Amino acid sequence: MNKNNIISFIFGTVVGAGVAYIVTKNKYEQILDSEIESVKEYYEARHEERKKVAEEQKKPDLSEYKTVLEENGYVQKEEEINKEEEEEPDMVAYTINEDQFDNENPDYDKITFQYYQNGTLTDDNEDVIEEDKIEEIIGDALNGFEDPSCDVVYVRNDILKGDYEILRILEDF
Image 1 (cartoon, rainbow, N blue to C red):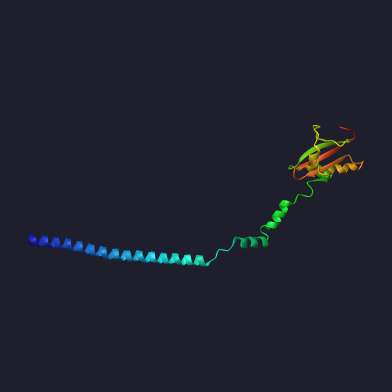
Image 2 (cartoon, rainbow, N blue to C red):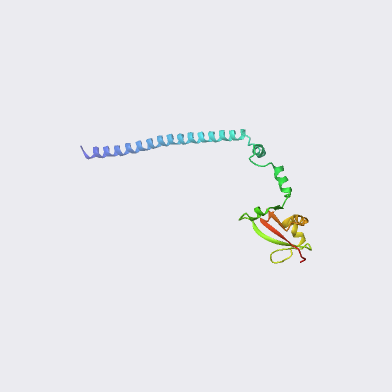
């Protein structure tokens, strides 16, 4: 073979390979573009479909959920909550017996008061308890001393977390 035939053969091979590359590249780019376009169309259609479904499904009003929860006893009805907030406890402080006072209750402080014959109430340090605070602390427990044989009254106050021992002192303060 002569030199021109070899060069022509190589030139033809290179040109043929180049043309084949370009044709193949263009063909597969078209296939890829059409596949990408079809995927875009699919997801756009799916998105639109979900949008329609979401619009068709009306979100229920939260008050409906609240009503169902109240009816099934999972939460208190609003009027019951408001009623509880408005109600004052009937018995803030109430009398208890000696056994209840003596039982160890770690959540309640044990405090001793002295109730003098002239109507004065003092604590262990002989500090006078103001009259407006007496009912708040021990309620109407001093009425227990109307019985002349009563020397001690025991009171529990659940709000103040206190157990009170009130001793009658038969002299004036």
